[in-house]
Length: 83
Image (cartoon, helix red, strand yellow):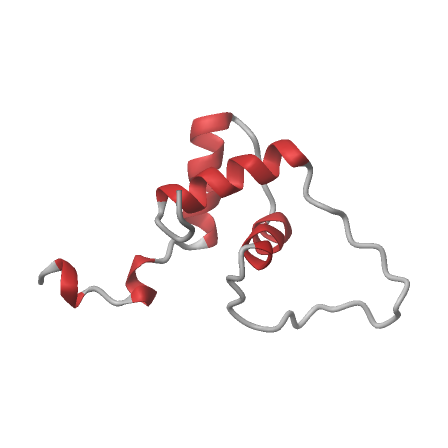
């Protein structure tokens, strides 16, 4: 198989791969929510969230800046966002 045969789907990292990369390189543990927030910030929306709050006032934690930077670096490593 050549590099040209690889599709965009095959080059995407799973959330577990991203979590492992961040933990290994920064020592930070990141949640799936934080990964999804950073992906959405960069226009990577894979599917609609099925666990949305039933009310408008539902509080959703925001990704802290240090974890956001670590996740962005992992996305760059996996070539999901440009350097």
